[in-house]
Length: 352
Image (cartoon, rainbow, N blue to C red; front, side, top):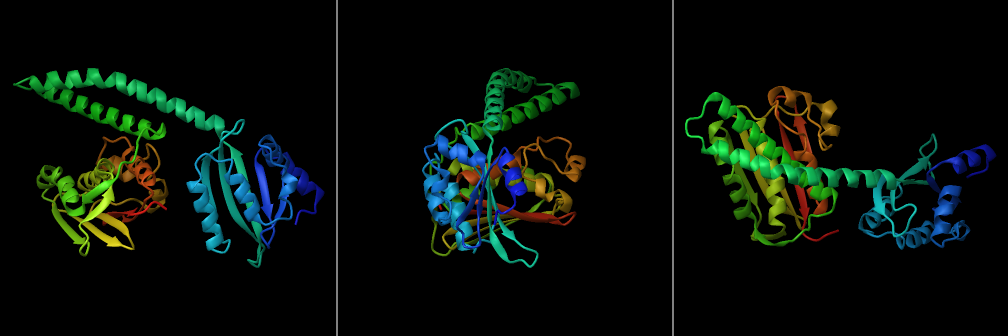
């Protein structure tokens, strides 16, 4: 496949590692950057040339600290006949490339014939460590702010005859406290300080408990709430109760916040193929199609949301998407402006 001197020189000059497979999934080419990194880890790149890709995958796997996501990608591209593109971050056992972003995509010609597969290995160690430093700073700053804000909130709540100014100050202090909690939660995720602890939980009881926490807000907006359970004879499911409270609570709160008075919210739970599937749908303002791809990004808020609800951090959906990834689940949604949104969370019984 690589028979052009100029193309070879270009690929060798890249700062990223490159692995190219041919149509038979044999290793065709490894560029200089990836060769250097493999040599640093005691691997001779020439050992892989001409051999099946599985030989490289097995050797490379031994250099990764946590292999679960890597294994998923390998199984995915093999199971789906090389039609899959994918992208993951991995932590390595050695320096100088401690963290790598690995992306892979199939190579096709103009007739859509499969010609092979391209792997790109990008060193993201500096970026990763900067992110960790930022998260640690946010965590420290948030902890320092938490106590004085709690004291302010406490004293303001003790005032009996509240003026408009006192009420405004109290609302501001409460929103500041919520922001601090959001930042702390995100920093815990970014610094891997959240541990998943599953136990057999009664599904309906847990969901109803979470719903009850928002009953006052639902009544205030005269929203119609409907629940539907399709669990068969199965009453329990292995769940981390705290994590599910965060996930479902956030989705319910958003549904209430962005649904107008006299609107509707539906919450469904069902067991399907050993997965617990929970959905929260509303008749709210919806998410504009052009902004849907960004909805799980940190600090992102859609334009129509900013207009209808000026207060907000854009952290909630990012946070729960990370929590769902932590429990090996997935989240997806469908939405139409001025008609509503449905979020669906799928949680596997067994970790995949």
